[in-house]
Length: 354
Image (cartoon, rainbow, N blue to C red):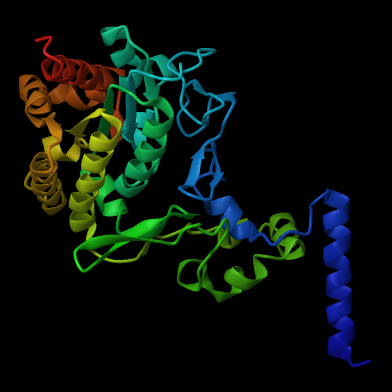
């Protein structure tokens, strides 16, 4: 037996011993990827073969990332109050990314929860932190089939459109659409559960990250600053986010026709678009959001742009605007209240109530 073979056997034996002692199974997991992904970072999510991930069903806690009470029901929908189950069917289904899910605010302060109070009708919060507009539309199709709502509300910020260009975001694989001959083709479905790439974490961690023994040694030798750093970069599939998003409006038109649910597409904005509108990224946000709303209108969907209402509040008092309407880069409870009021008014007009 050569030295290299003996060494290999010894390492395999040590791997098995450490796993058995710590009660770790023998499934193929990259432990670096586990630690760096969005879900591993404390966000309450679980793998989903169609959407990449969904909120963790039956979750009740205060994620460290937000310091806010979060409860999620058995249908992977965020609840509008602790202990409250979303009725099936719901009159309104809300979908989108972090702005709809309600990062940084408690259950009762999300705009879907506040909309439910304004309408006095059940509203299902189908938003998911980190989702692109492509994932949001795919989830809308599933939830509309389950709830048969009177209205479906898709809220986006332009960062959600950029995310439609990605096949991996914050360490989580996601489905995405390519544009082929002017039509959408769904790719990367089912997404991989755990797939670090060399360009993200380097060859050493991409390979040795699957060893629990190496991960164990890194944690106990104080090498975690390198082993778990610097985190995942995004993996882009293409640069056609706006084209994909516009074609997704055709899918929402088909959903509207097939279910009878009126679709309302809402544009909302990060604080930079109010405070630094001339910044190149803000210029892209503002122009792209306007173009997407036009795509929605051309496909027979109702639209709502929150920009004028946000600008009015910013101009009224620039010094307090961010602290009042945003927490970091996402809406505060007051920001969600503003959206809920605007959506309620839009729905009232849509259904002839005002």
